[in-house]
Image 1: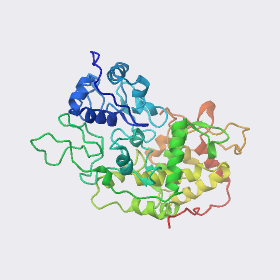
Image 2: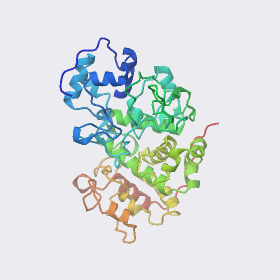
Image 3: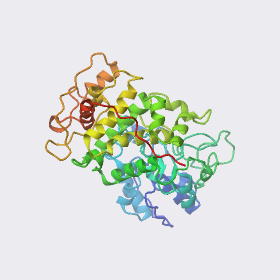
Image 4: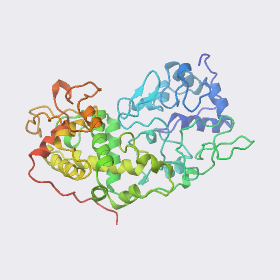
Length: 427
């Protein structure tokens, strides 16, 4: 991207929260111009599915733009550079995900980052005329609070995730229509699969559903950048620390919690969809490969994991939260006997530090967790690694233990294991 592009004859403002690729589609449709011509006018080189690191082409322009790229788009469109940047995942960098600034890749190994692709709300697409929200690209987005339904994972016709592949440059975008390459390419330029995504069916959720409550909480802390609820109320934490805690608990839930225990902790509709995916559904096979290690490929699985994790962390009293955590640990031991209060701080990187000593709600001091020589190699390595992969105790700033380690200590001091708390179920 070298020459400054000429200003476009028609201006189009992005919708609140809209993603860059969605706005570019809408711009091309408004101009009645093939998508590739609009991209070339703005100075974007042709992009393959995986990008080209040698040419500094990212796998997806919606991840992040260079300063000169942002300036060129702003000049041609009449939008402010800050508005352009807000349409890229850089808007969420260091909050809900982490981006490699050199390669412009989303790190999939932390904070449940999604490398590419987007979920979607069919009702939102219908209401907006086919415009896509940037937040749908986050691994933490699984439900639409406005329309009270789970987000769709993929096109029900071609069964492929949306926005993973570059759109055809030869066709004028059809907004709200699946743009994945058709199964049987034709001679004529094609806009893609052709299915009307507004007709996609997903699970409807009643008002007050625990999954909607969990989604509201996640979106709230991501936008504010700070977690000050429940366990964090006495010592607010940066949102990425809290999300690391939620990922740590949620990942263990998906990997190690027996099916019966999980089903007792989430509403029946979520449990049924989680355990009974549509036969032959492509993403279902991906969901069983190291579940919870990376962002769950299915929205319903993310909903189950986040709902259970927040059942623990929503408690202001650390000892009460510890009792709930102990219930999870006891259930997990049926599948993995090494899971215990002493190994909680090995559940992930970047976990939030414990509340500072003397703050309201701080638990009693907890002795450092004992090393378990019999842990499997993967767990043993994680337990011996710090927040950034360095060996040493899993501690936060100034050597303080992580919140999850504190909850483990509270669980050890509890004399009883609480049964799974009741969870509101739809009528």
